[in-house]
Amino acid sequence: MLTVDGLVKRFGGFTAVNNVSFRVEQGEILGLIGPNGSGKSTIFNMLSGTLIPTAGSILFNGTEIAGKAPHRIINGGIGRTFQIPRPFHRLTIFENVALAGYYGQGSHSRARADEAAERALAMVGLPTNRHAGVDGLGAAGLKKLELAKALATGPKLLLADESLGGLDEHEMDQAADMLRKIRDELGITIIWVEHIMGVLMRVVDRVMVLDHGEKISEGLPSAVASDPRVIEVYLGTDADSSQAAAAEARRRAGV
Amino acid sequence: MNSRYAAWAVGLAALIALPFVYREPYHLHILVLMLIWSFAYTSWSIMGRFGLVSLGHGGFMGVGAYVTALLWNHLDITPWIGIPLSMVAAGLLALVVAYPCFRFRITGHYFVLVTLALSGIVLQVITATRDYTGGSLGYTPNRAPSGQGLLALQFDDKTTWYLIALGVWVVGLLIWRWVDRSMSRYAMEAISEDEDAAAAAGVNVTAEKLKITLISALMTALAGALYCQYQMFISPDTVSGIAVSLQMVFAVIVGGLYVSLGPTIGAIITILLAEGLRIGFGTKAVGWDNLVYGVLLVVFIIFLPKGILGSVLDKLKAQPKKPKTT
Image (cartoon, rainbow over all chains, first blue to last red; front, side, top):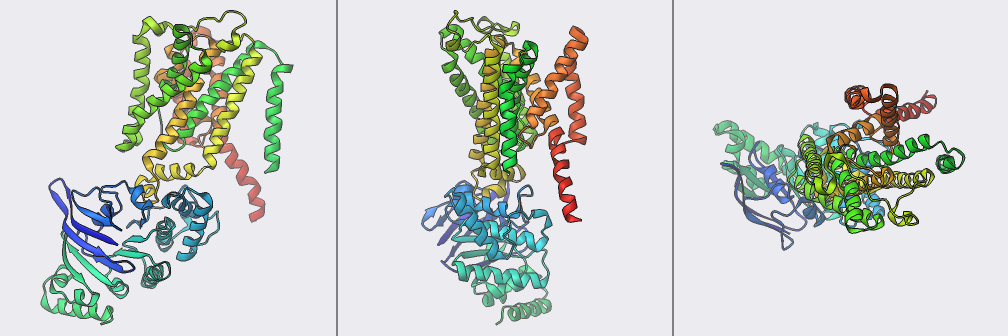
């Protein structure tokens, strides 16, 4: 579904993403993890058109989308959320999502937009009444709204950016289940960027690990969790603690 | 909702009937000016309400007025064709200036500065080409021979002008309302808050901004052309330049940026203020109105950012709800 080849992004002399290649298969959930500044969000921004890659190609269903304008990519079937929710405060919750339904599906039909908004809001568990404002939402509510906006654009591939930051453990589990439900019920392929490894490992089919803009590991959660390079990146090299952490990661991943 | 439409219908009928029962020429003149400027201010607010603060609208107005008059005087092109042509010219000018701004994300203060330059440039061009435009002395469309008033869009009769201005003003309000209810409003609100997030919702940010800018510029040019046809005299200071642009910002902010009749209230206030100063202090007060605008603008932005009408409507909306909740 998505084939990324030799993706590079430089900001001046700093290389944020260095020669990263990967594939995403139809219907899978790919986890994308890595420490702060490892290039996860930069990759997302290139996939969604917010940033133009310095080099490399991004094939989405056989079409080259690298460097295309964001609205074209969104209309082409990719939806995204932002790491920090970016709701439109001057619109109601419903209008926020209806906007995405109207412009994101490329159909520019108001009826279809309202329909998409209702479905998306129901999916993430937000009220579908037309008058509720954004300002009443808490952290979890804003994350749901962010997801609903992305879903309303009718994506085939969803880029979910750090959906769980700022949530408590119960909310985290709920959000993780939500992503799985989106894949299972709507058949949407997902790339999920996340700091918190534990919850992610439980849901994803495959994981890719980035460090300093480079891919250092990729594979099944259980394999990646015990990859020494991943352990080093996440936990430093102290042998005892890293082994303990690896054990913890394996336990979390349900291996 | 129906009572609201009824109120509009009654109000409009009263406005249409007015010149047939009340014919005092000076007052009708003031009303025509109010209607034309209300339309110009409404045009500005169509983009201004979304944070696209333009100080270039004096330029669009100048293009509307001067292109119409020049085509008539030099090429004998009737304003019926000249006005659409002047609107096209203003629209092209708007696209030339706005497209690079929007494409390269020139927003906020920087956008204001670019549009400020546009006003200045149009003013300079009018002044510099004085052989054609009369420069700072102003310009007068040639009088049409008697019997050809309709062709030349020149009427001595104030009632006719009043009705034309009223019609255009109503069209302006309808366009405002159409934008307000369209999906473009959602898109523009979203863009004004966060362009990247709007793009992630699938909005073609550049195209949406251009669309709204174009509508606004076309309407403003029409206002300039009408002003020219009505006054039969234009000068760079009255229809173009930075002073006119600032006057638009002032009037809209005082009247109310986010309500359809806000710019109209702004026009009523600015024209009453200018006329009051003129009658009260005569030539001594030339330019005082701009001083008062400046001071009031600061006061309004700080204390009444929604403008007079916006704040009044908020109060009215808030009150009836109270008994229900308690």
